[in-house]
Length: 331
Image (cartoon, rainbow, N blue to C red):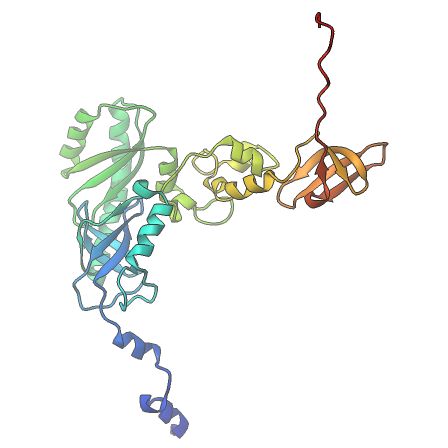
């Protein structure tokens, strides 16, 4: 049976009869980007690199770039120029403000290098082969580190697409003199070697996957600057201090405890302290428990009237009256 196109659909295909443009027409009018923000490496550093090609890549596109380390496969995040191929383009000012708010000078941001081209199928196949070869080197590198007798724990191996360098990440609680080890590794692996010391949190960033919340570890997914977390935050936010419930994959306090710390502190200032005497609509009493998030306090009323929960707005702290000084000089 033959198909007969309806006139109304034929008319929609003609741009002269439409007021709205299709996605393909909008994309065709866009210019190629001149500056692309990319993410690369196992440590997920970020860089803004110039681009001189005619193609219009979008977010998530794999690119071949010459970076501060060598030739690498990087992932496009967005563009920092207007009217470009990426619909999620940001201004350079917005990008710099985000970096400042996310760690400032400690944020792993670079601008040395350039985008060479969009990665082809051959580039990606070669990159998969390079990664497989590097993963196979892991056990032998681990043996060499153990044989050196140095206090170094092997973490991961990271190659570069261009083969200029092989980075070996290791964990150590102290500084070690690995000059002889570096010579041994360079001679056996026949490439330039960089030994890079990392901490427990960076180890989780390199090898961890999911957290107990069901999401990717924050350090692996988006968190660039790993600031220390205090036990004060854990005590303020958690009903329990069980290490299994407040520790992340790295064995340290979870990074997410810092996200709501400021909110908890501001809410905690409105809640009376435990054992404080307060005045409620039902009489005076003593605070025996406080719930910061719901802004409720449990009060034991005077005269054995029972225990009741009151909103913070209905509770007034009774100022403590200090005892007058004694007239007995011997006391």
